[in-house]
Length: 332
Image 1: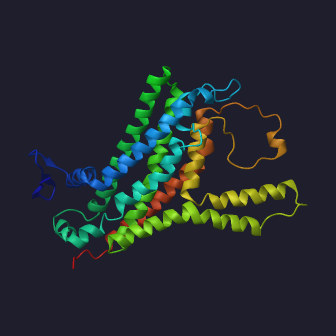
Image 2: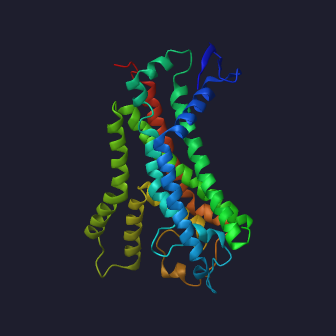
């Protein structure tokens, strides 16, 4: 896309209209993302895996409907959670492939332009310096949002055609909140990869750093938690409250991982029968009636997980913003 500079307050694009320079950069970045083979391959991989999970959910849908199921009225939500063991469910695929999508869209956001020498030429124009990094984040987040909502509504449409029953208002809102939480989850990895792109000169180094963090939380962090669990395991004579305290400690350590926060959040939103995300005493369980929670109660239950993901996303973006504003942008 050709962009011709006119003055400090506007840019002249192909349409001949003067636009704000921030939105011109956003449009260019969106076009670059959509046209790149890397993005096309990742989108194709996500669509194929989600199509496989959708096929598994539809073929096993009748088996998932049980007479005494407290979630028996939430038909559409089962499309995101049903699995027969051969393929994971839809939200499990998102939990696994979402970080790869975020890392792939941000690991060379800054350093590749600096190595090509285009970063210094863009910054020589009369625009604010923070426009560039803000526009890259907004463009990537826009592409991710469109992709996830397109996949979500595609599943809703296929489910509507197959089941023949429209989703209720609560089911629709739960699916919307699930898609929004998925976008926040991917945005965390996007900002983390942008931070590495600002910090490291070589794109391969920033990509390796992002994948290393993802592998650490996906594989090695659970091993570390298991070692801690064995080291601090309570004695057989421990009281019930000591055991619950031990389980809460392990759960809080697990919640340092973004994937754990996302898993708890999606499980609560897509499975209304989930009434607690932590260990309960016998007094708390006694007399409880197995019934689905209203949407408001599920949101209150999952709010700490959502806040944790938002906080991590904002912190990563703030660090990348500050690092970019202080970065030397001269090319070699």
